[in-house]
Length: 462
Image (cartoon, rainbow, N blue to C red; front, side):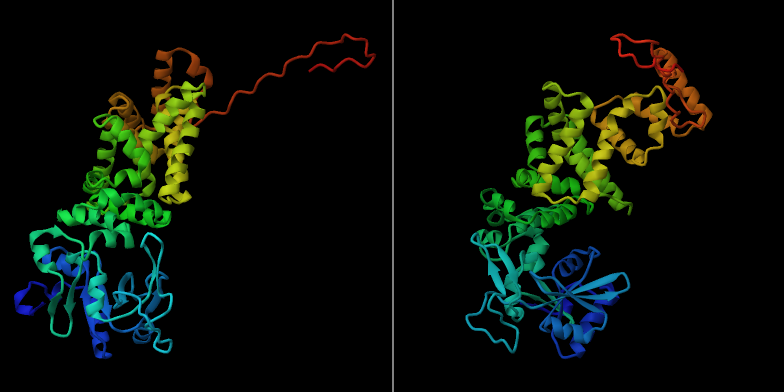
């Protein structure tokens, strides 16, 4: 169905000037050019699109010849990125519905192994090019399969996507089981779009999920990490988390987290996750920085505490138990979701600092303020307080001491030390508010003379 300009609400005034340049330049070069996917969907919903994607019948090499500011990327899907300063317009060539029986090597549109699947039906590589009539059936959801034609400003709708956008329904194109087997990440995308847009899931799209959710175990861990950021760090983390649980997907993405929540659905860990995700959503809306380090600290804290408790019950000291529990839980999760070390290492540092907040007397208390991970650890402490893990008084004490000068900090710690006895006073506090030097231990005097009749000289004293 072709919907003329007069029958839809999309205006070029709402489209990125960079995207318009790409569309017009492809058209002028003699190619078809369409704005596609989520950008068209969002424009119909009255939402400002996060990005704009373009589809064309030009091959990647032809796109590169049209745009000097173009870079070809990707192995699974060959794409062109056209750069306009910090903005990137992604341009994809129409893809065919299936690998062809014959190959035209001169044309390069058809390659013998261009479309490769594994035994489960998952697509491993897909560079078989086609036309728009083929391309539409390769897209995932009807709401994402709309094409805005720059030639006459019409919307092309092959799948009933306009009606589904109006009804706010997420529906897979084609047979859902086949589509999930082709790419199990589509299940995560369904959860994400439902959360982001507030759409319901069509029953046919929902039904196969629980049976096929285990296919997520075959998705590369690095790709699942990228998907997790889209789920939890894009401003709809709470809703995404809830959809993952409701769709039966969470246990295949964050197994230790799901298991801990099942054990105690209304406990402090459940509150911590909700508070952490809602705080992250608020920061995204306020255009503040968010980090996977804090996100995964929140998501894994409950399982880490449980393993720490188990290790302490087996006789390990608390500090060793916490250190080992972090390593154990994080390593197990990284095998499922490939969180890079640049995030897991500061995660561990932040969590190892948590017990130190409860030791407020002596030089170690003020030394904690100078730790490079103090601010992140302090923010996590505040979250633990809200979740009910530790008292509000503890958070208030650490909040206040940050506002004091060095002398006032010294007095505050000294006052606490005197109320707890002389132990902290013996440790000492530096005058500048930092850690004092450890006291030198006096050298023990050895006794003169010896026994055993060695005949050697007696040791020299001090």
